[in-house]
Image 1 (cartoon, each protein chain N blue to C red):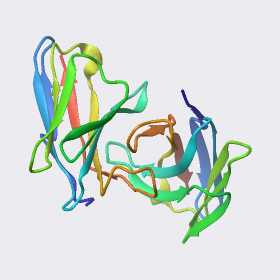
Image 2 (image 1 turned 180 degrees about the vertical axis):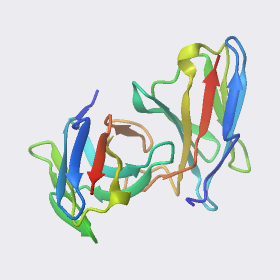
Image 3 (image 1 turned 120 degrees about the horizontal axis):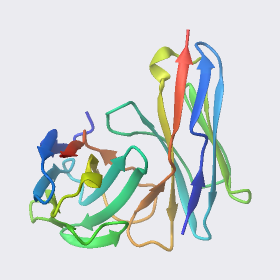
Length: 112
Length: 115
């Protein structure tokens, strides 16, 4: 199976930087996704990493270290609208199809 | 708007009943996924279909079944409902089934309440 761990909740201040960590255990790693989900709404895609390193996309960046089973999502210049849950999801090549296993999500609260 | 549609948006029913949730994927997407999200379980993968055939199975109960039709829309059938089945049910779609860079687009979800 797969274990995916991320902090349950985080709080940060508007305008600041926050890093949300995700650790995973899988022997067939084949990609890691980050999704943003506002309460009661659908998850929306943020980023994808399959090779080690940093992927930058505007205010959001995602980092992957496959040897450490570790990823983080970095959010810069935080805005109030960034208050949401951030879901880390892993794909395992041992699984059929394109199924993703999601972590429990990190609820981020941005305060003024 | 992801382009994935789900109906109904809300569903309230009683224990023991059966319901059907419907999903239409984005235009051109052949793969459909169903997920269940409850407060204590997070987002759980249930099942994936590709071009009408089952491709992957997750933590789907035997009381639940799904299918994908020739027009690529999918239905998730939940029977003998229990209180614990109350959750948000999301459908997602992607272009194909292969484990390459393959983003899944999520629909708005169906909120099921079992009383």
